[in-house]
Length: 454
Image 1 (spheres, rainbow, N blue to C red):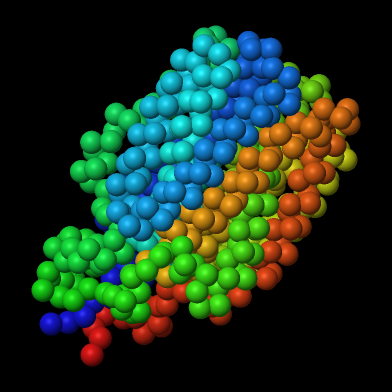
Image 2: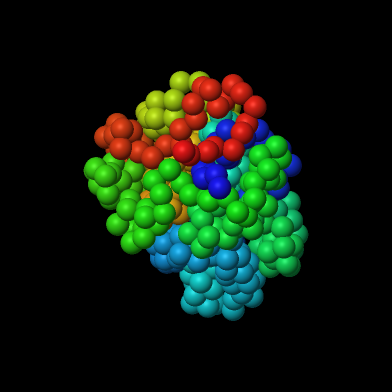
């Protein structure tokens, strides 16, 4: 009986139809996550007008919703490592699609906020599930680029939300954008039928039939059988005990906390921009459609940053690219407050998108891989959970900055501070203690065979 290491099989595999299946489902899920998150900022001007909300009240509504995302990330990450990522991802899709529809039917601010809070539980849990699953099922050679392009679905969702806000909402109602967010609920039967469970969960539960089936699709020439012994290099003992404890073990405590602050800084910028960019530009003298066009450019920058950054990460290293993007972001946001040239504003906002969501896209596989397979959903979930504190603070923080009477465009300077904090945090991360999947040159260069331990 041979001993097979599933993570090594995937790491050394070549991208094929099975990888594409996982990729497309993850892309689809994260696209609606991005759509749901962007829709609040897109609908905000109409919400404020209909319910007569002040900037501070509107910011509070956004922050209350984001509390749900933090709670969801903290709860669903560890839960997925116990009951499986597939089940948890399905639960998250139900929550955010059904209750987003409820938000679109809200008669008042209170009902709307409650619906958004419950929907946000699903959104908060969905992101670490998608990231950790795609990381687990991606070949090592192209992992950074695969996960980054998959996460572009988040930006595509934001683009769709902005296009609907620009061209459909003015002739209908702001509620339409929330009704569209219910679509994933109707595709769940197909999701549960075709989406695979995570390898780490199947190893824990000793589901050898499913492991053999999945690995034969990952590596068609491997001839894997249910009689094989499936385990990761650190053995079955690694799967015992608390997964939360594991993200601090083996000298990972300082790096884990540093990762949390890097994510906190990035999400503070992401949600501050997503929520207030259209309103900032509107108060700076641009019309509603023009203001939403800045959001559209921001989303395009997120995609370009993900693609170009993912390519460079494979060439010169993840950490260097992430730190460079944080530093570039600080320069970009200071520059945004100093210019009124329309063309330059578009360019700088595009760069801002690359340095925020684009940067987060690239950070996700790096963070997931830092932790061992049995704790990746937990590590990713808790990093995003702590980061959500920044997301929660962002709408209200920017609202207060706008309320004190400074020129709206000068609010961009506030985003330079978390950019600097994020760069410093990543400098502290010690990669020596990470559990990055290894792929030897011998395995990369030869035809893939089943990893066999003597």
